[in-house]
Image (tube, rainbow, N blue to C red):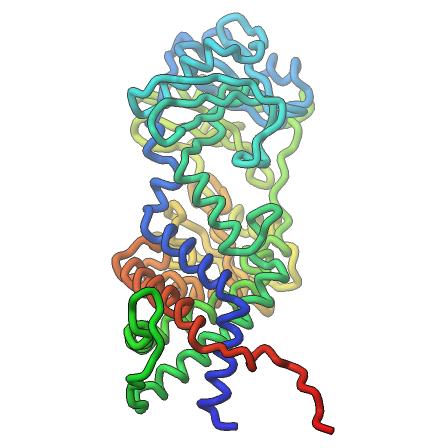
Length: 475
């Protein structure tokens, strides 16, 4: 049997068997590339909320007393909310303590949540409903409960979620986010958690789809040499020739990209996301409990008072062997050693310790270097950085902030392969993260018409005998 006949048979049957999934991939992909991801995330629903702390807000605050009263505390954060200064204690659960009277704040009621929602919401739509939920809805899976849901009459069912314990904004949802989440489920074929891109069903179907795309590419090539058939059947008032011509030229123009989409989709489904993210060999840097026996930390006022700028919040972090005060101010973030009060930055020795603490693989740290401009490997990280390289089989690279010591990114050779696949999949060959470009939208629209014409052509390429798999033997 010739390559042409094999290609036609493979393409015909795969198209029939996977026509519904092909349709879902194209339609869901088209939705994702047309609507900007920032809009999907709901960034337009909220505005920045920064309330400056006042010097008198910390007059009665004593870190030593706070530690003594809260032996389970592993971290804390000081900020102002609706004009009242609070310290958020993080330990066995979370709680807010009013800095004016040192009392634990009770759970937020509906009236206060209304004020918070009005403060955060970026619009003038009316609030239609405020409901306390004991169980997180599926669209906010994984968030702590109980929480408040605030709905707005803005034409897209805009919703904000707040923690009932701390008043923290936990999420923002709207109609287009919900549609995206629903369509994403079909795109990755995970009908349970909607986030597993390594599920077996997707792996099997993408491999079969790749065969269908390759066989279609062969047919597109052979069609260039074939003379048009003038005696084709009519469907829906149009001669089948119209569909064939449309399908043929779209296949020729975008056939390679279809092979790339199915091929990269198949490979990305096969690559373990834990390996891509490096979490399988990540130890993480744990917090130590801030009990009275922990290191003596200076009072936050010692670092806040000298700052001649608006201060929005102060929080504590832990870098292997020391505690750090991180401040958010009108002039940017600043970090201080919580034991000495000196301005803090990660030294080479500390960066080396951080790298060893986070890594639990079998490689050795072979290089540690400063990075002033964010490389592609850590394109979303805040510079300057420390880059730590290990000589394991993946060539693991860890990127830490020079300012706070926070781990900004994990990267390895498998991540690099996945990055290339993702770049080809979303057709952003420069920044590798924009899947709302004009190029991919154009190709996606062409693919929609290719898919539609292909489905219509299916009605003309099958005959009854194609389904007679077992023929009776002649006597």
